[in-house]
Amino acid sequence: MAQLEDYFDRQSHVPQEVTRSLRLIKELDEKVTKIQLKLTSLRKQYKQQQSEKTKLEIDQLYEESVNLSQEKINISDKVYEVVDNAVQQLDNDLKKFEENLKSSMAPDHKRRFLILSKYQKEKRKKINQEIEQSKEIFQNASQSEPLYCICQKPSFGQMVMCDNQLCSKEWFHLECVKLKDFPPENDPWFCSAECRKEGKGRMKK
Image 1 (spheres, rainbow, N blue to C red):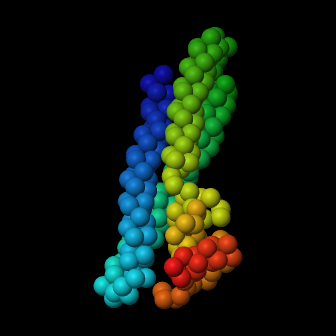
Image 2 (cartoon, one colour; image 1 turned 180 degrees about the vertical axis):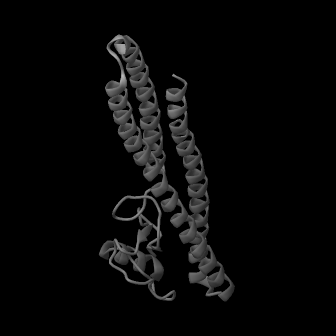
């Protein structure tokens, strides 16, 4: 029984690891959100003043935002990998354990095997429930992030801001709007014909 408990204890770290990762993702997301709000303000300020100092600050903040977003993606990928590997390893090892125990036990040990098997299944069920709860927490955390772009997903990678101040989506992933690079700083960029018409109309006022 002690060996069996040791085996499951080695797997019990997964929910805690997922929880720690979720906290870190939340912290990173809060930082990215603050940076993007600051960027929105600076972009509007730059259009009015054309200050090199403001432009430099925009570039620095944008680079920081991209790095933080990439870090979020890396942590997310690691979490999914850890959970999937844990579940697969758990199932494989439990199957081997059952096979070895069945092949080695004598007839008078059947009752003991049934007790072990029941304990094993209950323990596996508990760990799987914890893992599924962690997955659900992770998905809920992702869903609580601000959504941007036409894809309606959280911020990640390289993003460009629509110059229409009333744009409902505001930020867009470059690949979603089919941009290979950022538009020139001095050229207004609009996500759609409607935003272009509305944005240019406001600029003339």
